[in-house]
Length: 117
Image 1 (cartoon, rainbow, N blue to C red):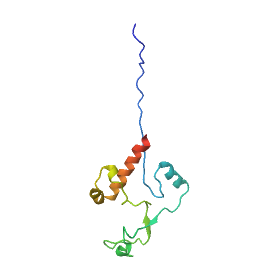
Image 2 (cartoon, rainbow, N blue to C red; image 1 turned 135 degrees about the horizontal axis):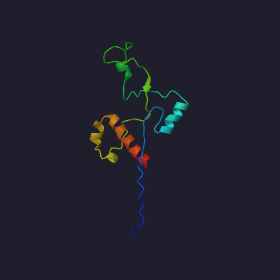
Image 3 (tube, rainbow, N blue to C red; image 1 turned 180 degrees about the vertical axis):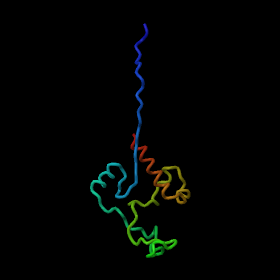
Image 4 (spheres, helix red, strand yellow; image 1 turned 30 degrees about the horizontal axis):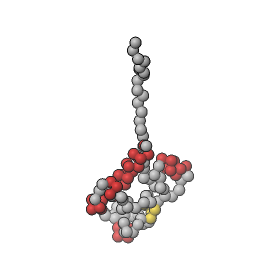
């Protein structure tokens, strides 16, 4: 007599995580949903230590190497220069030379893995 075997096929599963860095401190889908339900102005003033707008301002939007933005326009609240390089195995020198967007992406990808469980 053969032992009883479960002959059902395995059920495919997916482990899903998500993360985002969006205006208005929307770092989760639920926070983004809250912002969409109750809209507010989430633009921030530029930090003059990062970008001196006076140096590049020109009323003419078509002027080369210039902008016609005078005050608000920055969308993220956090400072992309703040980065835990050692956590990601990156030397301080390498972190300093990395594109700020790459630092943000590394953190967001880590958060998405973390949210997946």
